[in-house]
Length: 278
Length: 166
Image 1 (cartoon, rainbow over the protein chains, first blue to last red):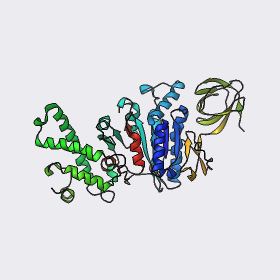
Image 2: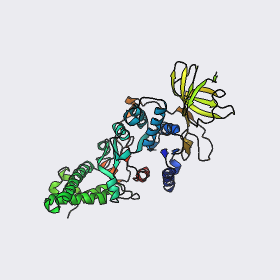
Image 3: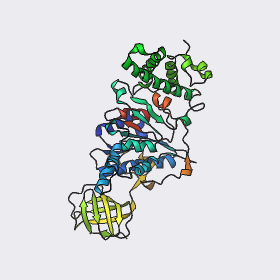
Image 4: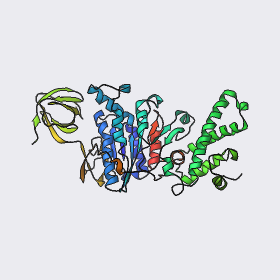
């Protein structure tokens, strides 16, 4: 289910071509409200898409993925109508009920007891001025179960997709991983990669200020790890489809850059089992 | 019986105020008929006493206040749903725009949906493999989750979303 909300023809066409290329188009329903279509229809576009999604998921037992792009345009249409109604504006001119309105939309995703289908939702929004405290990303973050944040810095380094790992979060990740779902060592590897990347970025920053000679040997390794992590783990391009096994293997290879004593977040039995031997 | 009103008080695009209405409800769909027979759609935003404020979906150009008629349809905006919708392209009002035939609806549903009963919600716990390491490995997506992408202007968010959709 794809809802184009006030986006350009180019972006909408990109999605439709992409669905065609991968053969997904026969399984896709498109609701299209482009930038030159009436703003008031923009408010009903995501609701149309979700109504169709609910029907297919809960009556026809399908697993529906809903992509809504761009929520920022939706909120702007809401602001336009609210201003025309002469309502009292809230933060940045958006109506005071922006939170309620977004919640009514986002909360239509989910699973129901006794139903086989599900609605998984990926809303896409643009942070105005790259500001995540702007009302649209801020209120969205309160309602949704996490967020994937894209980074301009990574994009400038040529890393595709430029996912900024540290501030990104999936609140349900612990529910979906582990033995029987992905692999027993997933949770440990995940925590270790997060921790090491975070420390590695700090070391790299320190290196630009104080110079490489000021770093301890461990910090140098961490900086090396952070760089390799971005280039190998994050930078997979748009056409590489990695299985979870591939992802975990790359994770272990990266962790082998660090001394084994630093891997404090993974159970020893998994280190013995999965860590590549030098 | 559907009443027609010729009591349009004022139009300030995209809003229209109609006086002396009876039995009009919030979010109800209405039709505006111009003297030349053209029909435009609108919906009720608020009702105060016998005055209703409507929102026009189309342009407000060329509307004659004295001669145009407003009909309230008695139901909110609905979408006719069917399995045949797969593979089709619709506009923001749910009308097909791909040149194909209209959808024969199995059911008409209020587009505002019914809020899901909290007790009927099942906890999402089923792993989805997206093929993207940073999502699968570090920010795992599960079925039934809502996981937004926060992008900055100019970044390739469409490419990432399409990659996940594959």
